[in-house]
Image (tube, rainbow, N blue to C red):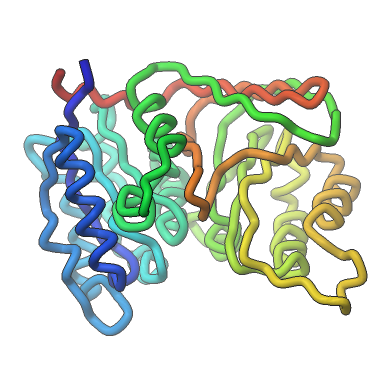
Length: 310
């Protein structure tokens, strides 16, 4: 029997300019039997942001005093705005409230900044996951995305399989971390950048030319972060326009160059990021990664599993 979750919406980033998509997302989640709270924030706006600084900050800080807690805290959309809030988030209070509770804090894109800051400050595991407007409000909604989201949230251990075309071999285990590459690199040198060695770094981005992605990865290399990882998993990098000027310089060129430079394997092919089809990943959780003969298996554990109601 399907599980019904109590879902509380949060909007710490950009204004939801696609109001019809958000309405479809609300309707779809309601139709699936889930209960939504705080949906009035979908309409908030201050310039390009989803409300004032105080309103957006309250979406995050109020988690520390919510009673009862929802099963899922779900971001409406990304955009920009989370970075403005990092200095005023009540990290310790939020971690105290959520530690030991089976609550999934979900979002991606701009939300990566808050996720990594929580991980750096408290070790709290959150989920790089579908959001209300862009994913649950898509036409049509991706069954792949839904199945991975609810599938992972319903199990204490979850394995994702995908093909990989470089035929490289790798086996390792460590902390899974990362998310949107632009947001991750924006945290370098700040108190909100996780200090993780021997981790499994997963990255994705959108509308970034390969040279810009290479520049961000070089920043991680020059600061010593990249070469301390066991492996890098490559998600979706879409929206870039290449030209004759590039003369064959593409994302594959970037992955080979950074892998050779750092000595870290770059494993491609994961459906993760700004695409209709995307997996859900618990940021800060335990991960085992196995790659052999063009097949990859990523096993995840050590993350909250919301109970919901049947």
